Image 1 (cartoon, rainbow, N blue to C red):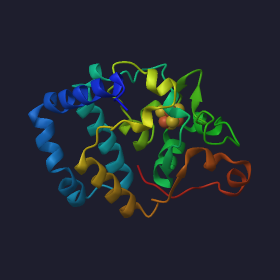
Image 2: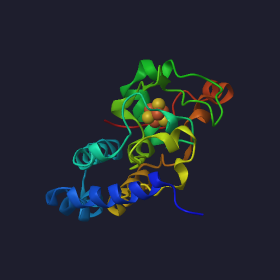
Image 3: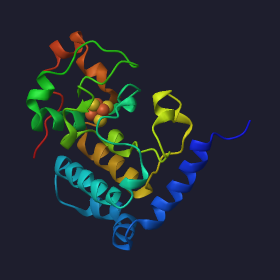
Length: 196
Ligand code: SF4
């Protein structure tokens, strides 16, 4: 079976994306895990730093992805989130956390999706930041075919994330909707103790 033209184009765009990342970011990424391991900051602060780094890293190739505000098809698939990340959401986006929709299942929109936009964008989880496709349009996402595509990943970013979760003792993950199933929600006022 021949490859879908959008997938072929996404491979070309993905290669371009890697090529145009500024050297300074590539060098920082190569040493990222080492920096995170040596840092004296607490896991929450390290996670915030990691999010910022990922934001900076993606600036150079944002024009090569159709992932834009208003497109939320990937908010309906599984969204694995750790307790550390959810605690950060609770801390920084309390109103959105309290208003999260309850008792949703995978396939239904994320509890934080409101009117097609992420209501916790500044503290959205790692997996949401990492999920960027490189097809020219979002047509494969609309048809729920995006999972066959290779996403861009950075080994040191991924390793740093796992290190932070391990260090936090709040690294257990589950689909984001499960945290807001009525039974879970009633019984669990505090996910884990985090420090800013
Ligand atoms: S946290 Fe935001 S970006 Fe991530 S799945 Fe939910 S609504 Fe989408």
